[in-house]
Length: 275
Image (cartoon, rainbow, N blue to C red; front, side):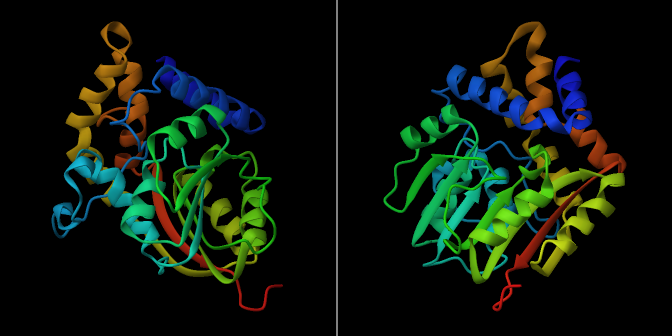
């Protein structure tokens, strides 16, 4: 109930989202700074026509296969090898680390609002082509045309203004650069979401409803998510961990399964001649 109440408040108070999420992730990183096995927090992705095992991973990455698969799905919508890539909302850094290690960008920067999360990432993900820094998705601390690609995974629902976020993405992208984007919304919010994408000045290249893929990933990954949550919170408060990790049957998986919530991925491109 506590976790459900927190999500309820976030959904109804856009002006508080930035602050509440920053505090939440600061506490998470500070309290569980040694939890190296939990580096990705998204709901995951599973192929429906074949096993997600087709994605070849190092043994150390296999436990987080389904959250990694979501990054693989969205990051490979357009080539990023040898490009300069920014992830906005890098969280605990596992997604940016996967991209940096497996997809060979020339430079990978992970940006997050939480200073504690950034500290955790710089301690746990040490790669020559990867660094993390603190910053706001609606006021990016980068000069114009700094990146070839921007990745945003299951993060924009936290932002008070989707328009300011998209405007900042457009500003820091180079001409012809891509936004690799995936997130979830309540079904009644989709029209406004699409309208924001349509007016942002980026060209929509691809759109896909991946709700079924996310539902299947949560189904397959629930034992790991439940066990992992018990390693963090046990006893009468274990249900809180179930909600935040997305255990099957809790609020978000149930909303996705009922059709009250949907999950999409998008590829958008900054025009070669920017408006």
